[in-house]
Image 1 (tube, rainbow, N blue to C red):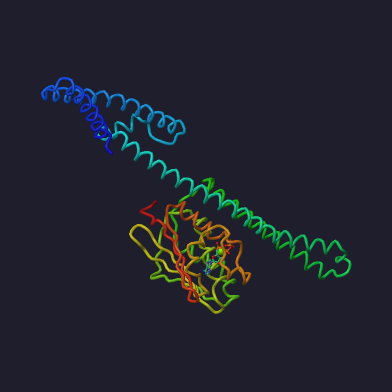
Image 2 (cartoon, helix red, strand yellow):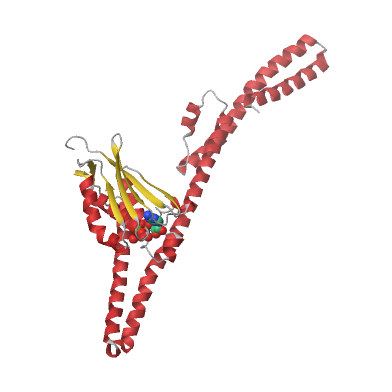
Length: 345
Ligand SMILES: Nc1ncnc2c1ncn2[C@@H]1O[C@H](COP(=O)(O)OP(=O)(O)OP(=O)(O)O)[C@@H](O)[C@H]1O
Ligand SMILES: [Mg+2]
C-alpha cells in the first residue's frame, strides 16, 4: 500500500475516534465535523513527519551500510532521482535491483571458481602425461638398458626428448595465454598484404599436409594484394593454428580451402576443411582452454587444446571476431575478421 494512503487511513481512524468522543459529550454534529477535520489534518501532518523521519532514518542506515561496502547508491542520490515517488517504493525497488545484481555476481564468482578448479585439474593432467613418460624412459635407461641395448636406449632418449619438447610447447602456450590475458603482450599493428602472409604460412605447412595427401587451395579472385592493419606475427600464429587444425582433423586425401571475403571496412578470412567435423554441442566450447573433442582425444591426435584459445585472444585483442561452424562428418569452417588498411596506414 502507498505510504501516504496508509498514513491517511490511520489519521482518519484517529480523527473519527476523537470526533466520536467529543460527540458523546457535546452532542453536536457541527462540533463533530470540526473535530474530525482538524484532528485529521493534524494527525496526518504529525504522522507523516514522525513516520517519514523514523522510516527514512532506518533506510538511510541501510544505505550507509550498503554504501560503506561500496555496493549501492548514495541515499541522497537515490532520493534526488526519485524525488516525486514514494520513498519506500523506490527504496524497495533499489534494494531488489541490488539483490538481483549481487546474485548475478555470486553466480559469476561460482562459475569462475568452477573454471579455476577445472583449469588446475586440466593443467596437472596435461603435465603429468609427458612427465610420467619421461620418468619411465629414464628409469628403464638407469636399470641398465644403455649397456644392454644401445639402439633401444637411443630410441628411449629420443622419446624422452620429444616429451620434453611437448612440455616446453605447453609452457610456452600457457605463458602466452596469461600474457595476452593480462595485456602484457601488446598488439603492434602494421599494414601488410594478408594474401602474401597466407601464402607464406601455407608454405610452412605444406609438407605436413602432403603427408596426409591434403590439398590446400587458396581462393584468390585476382592477384591483387589485400592490405590489412594488424599484428603480422600474431595473425600468422592464428593462421598456423587454423590451417594446422584443418590438417590434423582433416581426412586423408582431403581438402583445406582458404577464402578471403572483403567486407565494408573489414575482411573475412575463412579456413574450411572436409574432415570429421565437430559435434554441434561442442562448437561453442572449442575456444576454451584445454578443450579437445572426444574424437580427437581418442584418436590421440592434436595437442593440448590451447591453440584456439590463443587464436581467440589474439583476434579479440585486435577488436575483431572469430567464429566456427561445423557439420559432423562433412567438415569445419573457422573464420576471423581483420581491419582493412586505409591509405598508407
Ligand atoms: N578443423 C577442425 N575439425 C574438427 N575438430 C577441430 C578442428 N579444429 C579444432 N577442433 C577441435 O577443437 C579442439 C581444440 O583445438 P585447439 O587448436 O585449441 O587445440 P589442439 O589443436 O588440440 O592443440 P594445440 O592447438 O594446442 O596444439 C581440438 O582438439 C579438436 O578436438
Ligand atoms: Mg590446434
